[in-house]
Every structure is written in C-alpha cells, then in structure tokens.
Length: 482
Image (cartoon, rainbow, N blue to C red; front, side):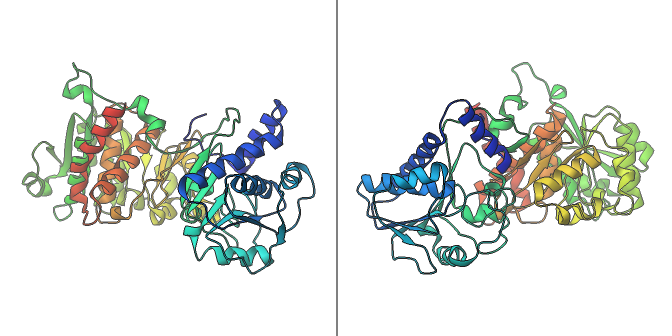
C-alpha cells in the first residue's frame, strides 16, 4: 500500500476486518499497534512519569498494551480508565496489564507525559463528562501528550471536533492517515504524525496525501533530444494596461516549471506595459475573442483569470479558449465572471481543464456546496463532478479533486504563501506542467506541492515575484530523487 493513501474510518475498519478474516487475530493487531506507539514514545522521550488514559474500546486496548510495554522498559506508568473494557480484544489487553487502574475523572495525576487512548478516529459525538474535562486539560499542554490513532474528540473523517478535544505533540496512527490527519483544524491538533505499519493488507482508495510519490513517475522531465516545441506551448491572457502584472507572474511560473514556449496574449492597449517587463516570455496582441481563439488554436494549455477583470470581455475570452484544443487553467476573475450562470462555464469545460478557486470564488460557482459538506474533500469532489473538470480548492489544506473521484490533500502548505500574486504563480505552474503533457489532475497536484515547497524554501519576506525563481531548487531535488 502506498504511504500516501488516506483512508476513511469505514475503509480503515474494512482493512482491519479483512486482516482478521485472513487469519491475523485482533489481539495481534492490537499488540502491533501498542508496540508501534511504545517505540515512537521511546524514540522521542526519556523515561519519565507517564499516565495512560484508556477508554472502553479498542483505542483503550491499545493504551493498555502501551502501558505494559513502557513499564517493561523501565518507565514509571499509571493507567487511568473511563471504564473497564467489557469485551473483545480490549478486554484481553487490559487483562495483561499488571498494575492498578484508577478511575479517570476531571483531575489528572501529575506526570511528565500523557498517552491519550480514550477514543479513536471513529468517535462521532462530543466528548462529555470526565473525558471532556480530561481533553480540555490535555489541550493546554500538547507537548506533553501522545495521541493513539487521533487526539480524542477529533472525528476521523472530518477533523472538526464537536466539543472538547485533545491536542497532541505526537500522534501515532496505523496503516494510513485518516482525513482528520490532513484537514484543518484536526491536523493542527495532531502535532507530529507517525503512520505505523501493523501488517494490514493492501487497501483501495481514491484519496491521497499529495506528494511526489503520487505523481513523480509521470513528471515531464526532458530527454537529451527534447526541443522547446516538444516541451509544450503555454499562453497566459493578460488584463488591461493597468492590470498586467498577474499575467506575467503566471507566465514566468509556467516558464520556470518547464514549458518550452510561453506567450502572453495581451490586449493591444496593454502591449507596451507588458513588453517592457518581458524577456524569455513572448508577447502577442489581440483585441477580440475571435482573434484570441485563432491565435490559441495550436497551443497546449492556457491560463486565464489573473487580473483579467470581471467583465464581459473575460467571459467571452474563456468561451473562445474553450473552443480550441487547449487545456484551460481558470483562475480568479475568470471564475468570478460566471457567478451569475455557473452552468455556462461548466457546459464548455472538459476533464483536462482546471479550476483554481479560493473559498470565496468556490462559493460563487458552487453555491452552498462547501457549507453543506462535512469537510473540504467532499466539497471539492462534488464540485469536480458538477463542473466536469479538475478543481483545486485553495487553503491551508488545499484539496485537488478530479471528476473521476480521485482527490489529494496538500499537507506542506506554508503561511508565507499568503501574499498577493501567489495564486497567479500557482496557475502558471499548473499550466506549464499540463503544456508538457502531464495529466491535469497530477499536474495540479504537482504544482500545488512545488508551489508550497518553494514558499517554505524562502520563508519570511516572501513575495510572489520570488516564487518562480525558487522553483528550480525544488525541481533539482525532485530530479535527484527520481
């Protein structure tokens, strides 16, 4: 199984059940899980007074295994339980713990480290009573907390706690991450996340954590005999004379990501504004949507939207590009201009096109979808199916979704990208990769990851003009690791 897969709570339960049906007892899986947690704790902390908080289910059973193993390694360990396990593997694990078990109430014993084994990812109700009080206490000192599977109180499928929840400095989960490990705010409550292999079989899913493992094999590296025309032809549509910078950011991004020929199509009144700032990026003037359609007839990909203007001209230009064979990257104003009639846009899109909305733009095209969805993955998938195109929903946990149901969540986002023009460069990265022949879903995933890596590489003080120039260092690393 790929380390980048993300499983829903149901899919994880099916993987557990399949392993048990194939002959691995649940007690063995629980022992492996507890061992993985004990190993992760031992690798990061020195022995110190430790309290293991156990719930009544299998998460609590894992906790009893951890307590027993840490005690055997010389750790001073106490166990506090919400209630005794009543049946199954957890009861067997509790029976192997040879120390006292105190009742868990609102007060926690003093300790240097707490192991949260109250509830796992399957919990879908608010924490109350002693569990809720304990969660509130533990949330105040996450650096002293290790969560088993997921911090208690955080639902595994959404990451959105319905009440009090634990915050941890380290979370050890098993087999694969769940949506709450990658979606905010759940991700922020997990701290460092370790995914431990406990011997479950291969699991099929269409949800992935975005990273090179997902698309590296299909990244469009040039061969020794590759020429510029073979590396793809990308165009970017400029705004008017006072709004040309965003298109240049996108164009430079497309060039840096590897597109062989990048041209800005500019209204003629903006040609002079663009010309004085361009070198390797080419420039071509046009005045009407029909001129644009004719000029774009032989290109591989087109970016439209950055500072294009929310005008009838932009709408007509999108429709003109849709009549060509180019794959479209539709961003910013080219999204907002269809707010009164999203179906007009959807009717001309195909599976090679990419929409790149932030949440506000997403709402303009897909009214009520984000608010009604349990989390961003579901919203992005519904949007991709409705639009018949790839949708990249921007945010701290950017989600890329394909009409065929595939989705990926970006987890390397960085706050330094919160600067004007950052999204324009991202659109250029996507367009540049598609122009080189990369499949649109994978191109969007790769571009989002490279974009975030470039932002993190620079760090404080980043402005969008820096981003294209940072891409080569990230590409070099990918090239060396291929």
